[in-house]
Image (cartoon, rainbow, N blue to C red; front, side):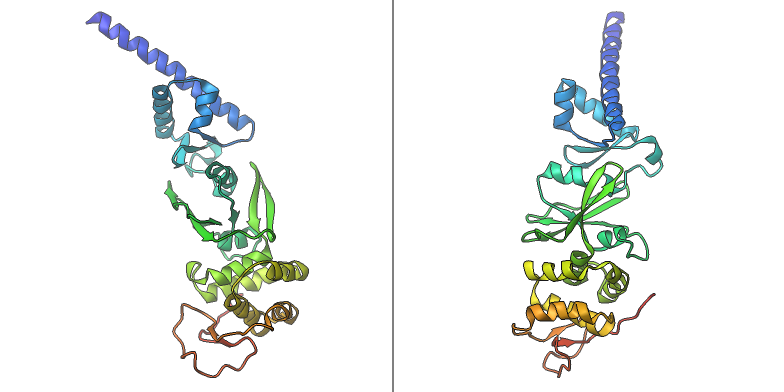
Length: 285
């Protein structure tokens, strides 16, 4: 019985050494300003067995030193974020998306907030990518929601500096149009309108014109945006940029809000955008 106990004790000592080796590996990562790693990376760097890796990861997770946000991908939690138990997603989303191998940009309400055009920080971090859609992340109070497009635009995306590197974010021009497109997913047209009231100050007219010419936003989205710019946001020059682009097309009647009940489309529309104003917008500024 004594020999058996000594054998177990020796095994525990070896496992403790391997755990400390893993912990030192994470500390070196943090010293370099990096807060993510994959299982594959750790296996190559540490040359540990699968069992040792698995046990170390389990122990580190229980101690709150790491969090798994995607199978095989972990976020390191430095002491200053131990209370929150997770890093802000802007600090690791670039590494996560590189791990998945999918193009991306931070968009919609999250992008608007990063441009200073949000009344409050959105609870859900919103990321745009391509199909097939990634599964949304909901762990440790962290929520990341993935939206998809058939293809991401080649222009309209900027890089913003963070403490861990750079993150791709839709510029004010692309953000404004995406908010129109994903109205249902961001809380409705009134919320979109209130964000646009703030975001409009940062929109560059030349960049905006280039974006609507080079991207494939549906005419209905551009009609709604043009209507808002002309009649609600008092920005005639920007609205003209859109109208010059789509005036040669047949503009079918469309509701201003696709979420709100309103009159039938056969009703008379008295604006050049052929937009039925089926919602009363209320400014919060």
